Image (tube, rainbow, N blue to C red; front, side, top):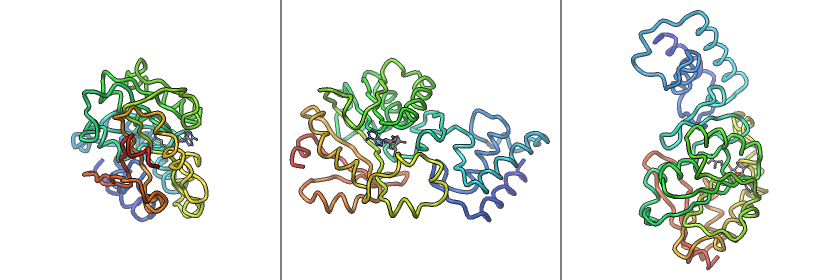
Length: 287
Ligand SMILES: C[S@@+](CC[C@H](N)C(=O)[O-])C[C@H]1O[C@@H](n2cnc3c(N)ncnc32)[C@H](O)[C@@H]1O
């Protein structure tokens, strides 16, 4: 099996694929695809390596490698399984592959940006497959979470993940254009990983991104459409002590330029990634 893993890693490396949708290196993809070919429900571990590969598993592994290399399908869309903040997530092309650095912030219960003990409710705008909303529900067992998305297809994935993680009673899924379905609700935390890719950048993305829903990535000509709505409307849905946390990736330069008066705090992450800001409700009033 070790030999199969090594030779697959060499093939993936030679194919010069793009990584960043749930896996970071050729060896990660090889291990994930091998685990899937072996029908394991957990990640491939040391104890699996001495096993021999059956002819059927070898054929399945080969087929998965072919699809990864020739169709440029992200490995997690082939395995349909990913992990977010330590939680299992079903993944399929109806929703973006979970990868937001906001996972780290959720694991820290948004501390020090808010006192976790007083968080009663959370809104996730653009929930996609629900990873952020569901991880929030697990991190805050007494809070209610609203998970809003404009895409019914993505919400179908979120429904699977809500059940997978046993949080059906506290995570409400809402088909909503930003805040449209939320009425007058107010939240302690509004968190969002909205689309933030501009037209020119979208056209230059590696082939792997074409397998993700374009509406999860593209946000107008300059990538700013979604963040503009969030900065304009979030304040009227936050409690007075509430916070807004938004991922904008490399669109951060445009955000700073367009909102010079807003005192964004840009977060750093131990596991990498960036382009995430925090603003308090009070600061947002100045937008
Ligand atoms: C970058 S994806 C993030 C998905 C998920 N939160 C994550 O972190 O993996 C952005 C999501 O925003 C949703 N979205 C795009 N426009 C929207 C809108 N006008 N209102 C609500 N959601 C929207 C997309 O359907 C997509 O699921």
